[in-house]
Length: 267
Image (cartoon, rainbow, N blue to C red; front, side, top):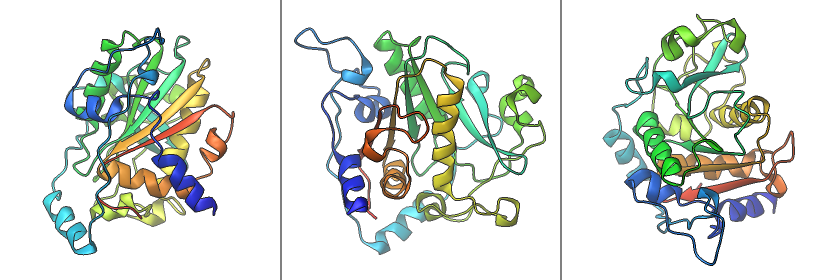
């Protein structure tokens, strides 16, 4: 019952949440507000196409089509926005953040999971454009994690800005999922699991939610969203993670909304 309730909660699209999926992926401007509603990205209309359920043999074909990767280390366009989320065993999660940790004006966070080609930088750029269009770039932080497919040191990811103050040493390495697409989409462990005992891809999002709450002192609410392969990942994560139970975060009890966009498979 809990799994079904969680899945239902993650699939419900409230028309006052965010216009992220159509807007962020396609660069379509957010829908205008009506009836005197507050001009906020979190209250724009969500536009999501119907879920398409595909057979297992189509998944294998999908994996072959996306055997290439758009994960770059160092980032090609957004290294000034690159940050490191600490993990155990001198490792970290590479993320892009539109506002630096410690920014006191941040009230809301949108965490978006990239699709099969791991296009974290492209998704991040689209999110920043939408938030700027809403004139909320000082109060909403966009966070995009990257599920790496190769090793990447903290110094290479975030450049000279990485230091001991982040809690991540420069020689720390990111866990990476380089075998098949299903590996990170289904909550699998990274390559070289002996270096990251007990770590699953679902743990990564839990860590990022904790990091956001710890590093943006005036944060009031969070939205987690994903499109295509990122949506498949979120469906499974939402059913298994303690985050989002009763619609709030685990540690601080902040409102947490989950938006699923066009997952090619469901469970």
